[in-house]
Length: 227
Image 1 (cartoon, rainbow, N blue to C red):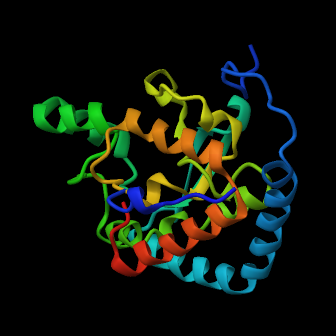
Image 2 (tube, rainbow, N blue to C red):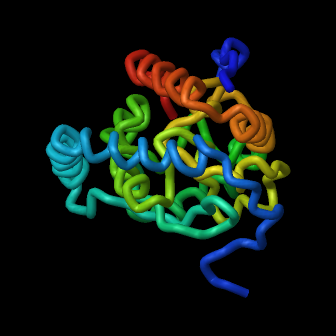
């Protein structure tokens, strides 16, 4: 099944969150074809991606700290996994965020609504460039290879965001390096509105949809409008 993306151009077990819905019936593309394509494409891209990641990691590490960053995220069926990125923030980012939000009511209101800040004081100079071009996401190719993520899917949700998230579609697909929300009004959309994109993707997932999202992702990268 294909999908028109025109309207989206503006934007007990410690390893599992309580599953909000039962596992659906087998979907040929989503459950069989898509994971195989993901692994095949990552393997093919590895010869180019690995040296590129190494260069970027060396650039990030010029401040004397580790170039990689990992964080627990919620995956398909509520399973928790560790997602990898190139570090774009200062080492004491959590403490800095708390202090910044305590001192700036407007920033706190923005964070509460969107779970991000347009002017984030935690982001380094190199990190800002990596985010604009979405290159900080490249280490997630390892998550795709491990079957924890897909090339295309919902943006991986942090564990502490579960209570803020109203949708169900997110839990029926693997989170992606890119997806509908990432190529839409990503800088303007409230956090809870992401569920609209995730539910739509779950309903309409297909090869055509994924190809369309990947094409749009390249457009976002070339425009430097990532976040």
